[in-house]
Length: 217
Image (cartoon, rainbow, N blue to C red; front, side, top):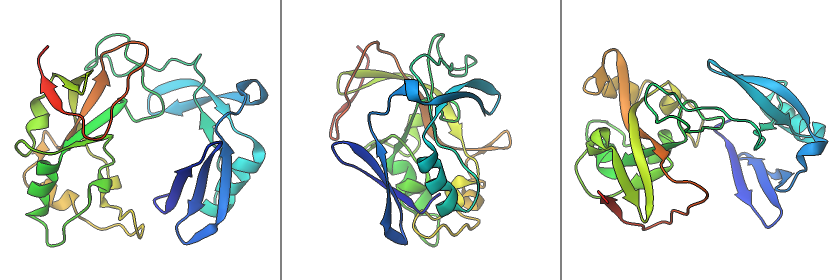
């Protein structure tokens, strides 16, 4: 899946394989949920209801990735809660591992890259937000802060799985960066990089590239 690429036009999400860009799947942005079969899905320890997209879409993913697959979306009626051991009560998450947002400072990646023989891009870690300035890993201790006028709360440093070892351009997997991170970011047998976030607002909000980070009200 690392080699799948996406683009958005006015009516579709376009999906294609990096090595065969002419084979494009068009997924309508407005698919009526009433026309989709709903099934129960598992995400780690959570079970919830998802809507299965049409057969032709699932057939494309199955053919391109070489195994039987289905693409599902989360209906608005489905509520999956973020981990209440860390997040405030009532915080939702969709199909992400545990929390809806992840932030990493560029200084943290720079610190890691200074220890590696070959520097890595930020896409290895899949953050929603990247900020510049500040000290390496200072996001570890963040609690309440704003991006622009939108308030977020840091709830838990992100313990990493094996995915950052996969090159997103080639799909080749190596020991790095986990081998190096284990030498100085290993806490209680978990390797941490980045901070999980929840949004503390209601209704809707917008975050834009270039928005300032601020702390306190």
